[in-house]
Length: 437
Image (cartoon, rainbow, N blue to C red; front, side):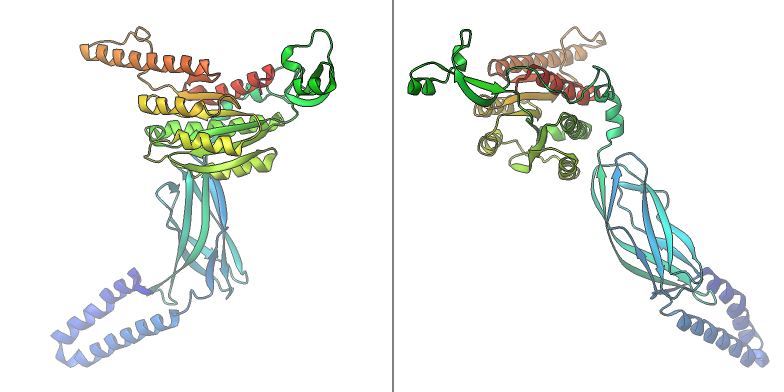
């Protein structure tokens, strides 16, 4: 595509308009003026024809995949290929999505002679976690005489993945990841009885009745005791709710994803297997528990584009899925919202299917209104009193829900967004220390 440049308009005003005035006002000079106008038109036409195809040998090569972190400046490195190896100045533009704030969407680049490739770097700052695509690029260069601007477009095919910002969250859990002395989280052998069956041996005075293998005792005609060993590798799953209650506050859902992935880092350092289950009214994602750095990358790539849906969670389907897929006893860390009475009742019904097989920790970010009645002295109007009463009733209902879950062997915690990651890692460390799984 060819469009006029300001230089063409300036020359048109400086040459064509005066000659047109001369041709209309002075008839003897009309022929010479018309010839001058025609010569200028031919010159402009020649310049347009000479510029055709000038960008056919220029293209942009973007990396197929770029990884960035939310709220952190990142760079997108690209190369401009100039097959003709001729010196020129091109203007390059990329249409960034609104979630990616770039310093400039276009820039002028001088391509040197005798060089096929030139590098270019965009600095951008993602505002929101997710998956984005740069599908096209735009090029512009001037014609030989500068009268016209030649424009071209081409496919970019660049995927930009914006991950959660782990740097801020790791500040809250930095002490837990120290690996020196007796402070922090570090892999070590756990003393104790354990839960993995190792062998059978004859009964010894002092063995508990729960350790006797009754079938083997009946066959051998004498008491036989089961011997256990501490598990070397345990399975830890983050069960992430992506339904409507988690969608009320985008910051809450972001904190839940970040905290869940940091829990995976802690499990990796302890040598445990880590997996993810994301659900709404159906199972959205499932990563079976494995260990190693590659497993963390799998879970991160699974969750970075996850967004909550405006649907009611189906806890019955989730419980059936866990019961059929997870045969081995595992630690299930739920990140959900249960401040809706109907949803909490559905959760209690579903949790009965899995609470006897797995160790379950239910974590919920405390809603801002939910607090004891006299914990906040900022009451100025009668409306504030009713608001505080409503918050107290919500806090009381959640406390009662925690007691009901505790009777089922499920631990329920109301956490703050600022300390969510640290509290999850601390819960995991305590579970490992007490050998509950």
